[in-house]
Length: 338
Image (tube, rainbow, N blue to C red):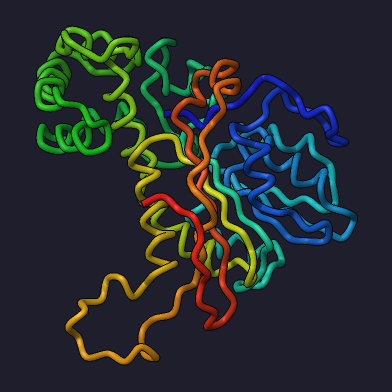
C-alpha cells in the first residue's frame, strides 16, 4: 500500500509548505512527545510532512535529521532552509552510519524517531516511476533511481519459481503461479517494458478479484517490495533505531500493509519482553534473563473515518509506538494489542 498523504498544508508551519501532510501526522506528533530542545530523526522524509511538524515544535537548540532514498524527495527537501535541519540521501537501513556522518553520536542520540513506511503518493502518482498500474510508464519501481535493478530488468531474468515466490510472499497473490507463467511466456516473445503492458498481462490471467481492487494490485505490490527490498530494510533499520534512541526516547512507526506491520509489531514485542522466547524449562535465574529495552505504549492507532474519507489511501495505516527503557528498568504494564 501507499505511504499516503493528505492534501492539506499545516496552517501553523513557519517553513515552506508542501502540499502534503503525512497520514496520522497529529497522532505521530503526540506519540513522539517532542521536546523543544530535543534531537529527532525522520527516517522517511517523503515530502516533509513529519519533518515540518517536528521543526515547528523545536526551539533554536533543537535538531532534526531526515533520511530518504528517493532523489526526488531529496530535491523537494532542499526548499527547507533551516540550520536545525539536515537531509541525507540514504536508505533507512543506514541509520547508524548516516547519523554519525551528520554529527550525532552512534548511541543515545535521539529523543524520537519516526518511520512512515511503504511507498509515497508522489511516487505512485508519477507515471514515470513505474509504481502504478493506472499510469503507463517504464517498469522501474525503484525508490532510489540512482542504483539497483529495475522491475523490468528483474522480470527479464528471474525464473518461474522466483517470480512465483515474490508474487505469493510479498503480494499475497493467490494466482501467483499463473501470472508468473504468463510473464515467462510473454517475455520469450517480447520484452516486458511498461506498467500498462504488465497490468494488461495480469488482467488476462486474474479473472476473479476482490471488489474495488484492481487485479494487478497484488502483483505490483509484490514486485515493488522485492525490487526495493522493503522488508529487509525494515529488519535492518529497527534495531539501529533502538540503539540510536536516548532512554525515554520514542519510536513511532506507521505501516501500510500487514507484512510491514507484522515486522514492527514483533520487533517491539520482543524488545519489550525478550525473555518470552526462552524455553521455560531452561535453568536460568531471573537475574540472568535479558532485560526489556522497550515499553510498548498503548494500542495501535488507525486513521479516523474523517481522515480516510479525505484520503482513501490512508485506510490501511497503523501507527505503533514504543519508548526506550533506561538501563535495567522493567517496563510497567501498559495497554497493548495482543
